[in-house]
Image 1 (cartoon, rainbow, N blue to C red):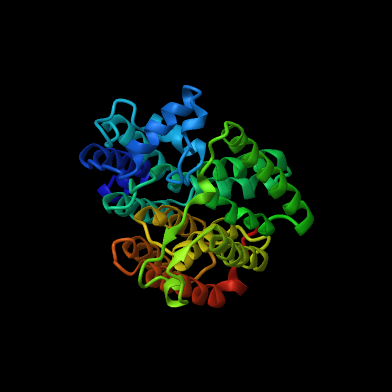
Image 2 (image 1 turned 90 degrees about the vertical axis):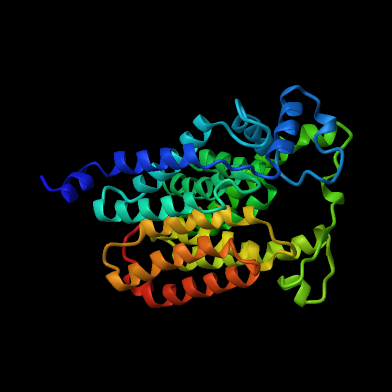
Length: 349
């Protein structure tokens, strides 16, 4: 047996080993993880009136609890090596599993995922937000299978990680008609609201009092805004959710929509946000890897190669000082590819 054949047959073992080595060697210190873990401890202790007492916390209670779990055995803001290894291996093998048993595709996706893990963003700021596009995609598959209540629960969980996740709810239009998608989204919203309600009833809930400074180079800055309130966030939400809904509807019934709709929602956030943080790129990177995993076999190899390159460039865009421009450029690239591929996207959800 040649070395190439051996590696191909043992590709998942090899990828898991490399991911574990990255998790062992990499020593990230996500900037907000320690503060979130402390707030998560307060949630677990029932001190709900202290969690959202100020406007600092814009993340959901589930993210705060997950941050506490990620720091079990950790040193200050750095997760322990076993935690890093488990997360990195799970993300790599999960991406390979999405390829549905296609060995060559699994190898490409594994390389892309490992390159992402070697970069600066996998543990940036809010590592729990890696789960958001994964939850969106799983919810789409469950909705397609008729398990809409479970789909609603997953979407609600994504919003309890970060409220911004509600902008991905229109992904459901790829697998359901407007009425059924709206029903699931409304139940998901109810799940999210019920998760925040105990904190609201505690009497101290300052989340909606937050005002964001507008960073130079962002779209809101170019439009003349110098600070952004929740009103501006609602306008942003209309753009992001509208773009997500459009792509989901255009690709309805196609398997690639399970990644493409979340990717558009994830890219529109940094493209339209008034401020730029590295962790905004967590969902975009995960969704770009998932897109490569779900590309139809009938797509010509040159176009598949372009999708892989775009996926890698999406990861690199997080390292630039022009995140909004990078997100817009990547979004434009994917839309050009979409216009070229659409007749060939025959694989059904």
